[in-house]
Length: 215
Ligand code: SF4
Image (tube, rainbow, N blue to C red; front, side):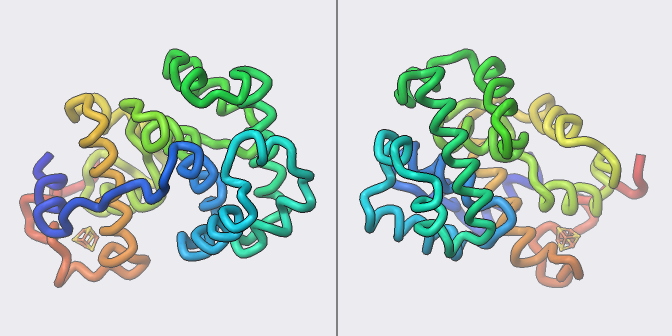
């Protein structure tokens, strides 16, 4: 919480996740894999232009047409297939109804989403937290990088769920907190804790934010 508070005081609220509707958040979470958010925004603009940011429309559209529309997102053929798989899941399991989907028990829904080809833990948890407002902490490469550099219980080979457990067992179970904390870590990673860290101007560079040695 000390790190959270310092980051929040330094960066302010991040206003995540960018998206007008839960459905747009889900589409963005799938499109953002292995690309910058700028490219996702271009793809989403094209989806909006073609009135495709709607479950029925995306469910019905042909995969090659969808691929062409989302071309700016990179890996567009793979991402079109992933979006279509997610739509098959949404309609097959929940009649295309997001409210029905998010009324499912969180762990059950998470397990089911992880069964969709191309939906990994980070994407599934981003959908649960940012589209479904479920209390699950999202872990990404920046989380691993920052907290391992600070010797805070995260080593290079620790798994996704172990890192997630670390946060969820030591933070209040609070959707707003999880939402903001992940967004702050991403901002920190993009702007300060890069491959070559810029500690001199980083808001969490003082010794109180580091453990002395790895566990
Ligand atoms: S830039 Fe330095 S002080 Fe900031 S999070 Fe990374 S390792 Fe820590």
